[in-house]
Length: 205
Image 1 (cartoon, rainbow, N blue to C red):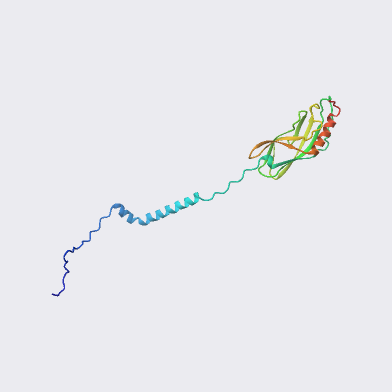
Image 2: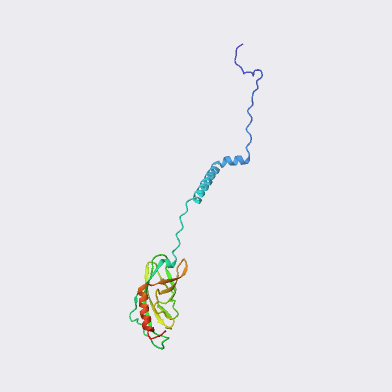
């Protein structure tokens, strides 16, 4: 028998019915409507997170080294006796009113400015003044001449032959405050001995 007609299902066969589309919920509908915005926002968040990680994990620059201690940044050297400084002894043998003036040069090699807050000498039989008077400041890469005047107050306590006379200087800069003793060398020792001999030469001990 021949002819055209609907195909009949054979034995043990079933016709599958296509299920109707499920209704979408509100969230799904909103996502569908704003899908591009959501995807763009997610991409921005990923980029921001990656950038934050790279920024946090970047190599940090090395911190600047601290400035030097003030005693390591300066030089203090003996220059010469000041003009008209020869000491003259007057008064009783145990007391002399003469003065010995000399010049030292303070140079700041590097670092921040250095302030001299105190300038003294170690001998009980001598008094000392300076010009400029402390405190005074010297800038980096510059030098300052300081005129120091010593006067004998008691010959009994003044040194006759100081071997390594020095000055006690208190220094301050941005890093620290230091008390340091500066030995001024053999020429200063010779000049000081000569002036003390003139001031106290008539004193017998």
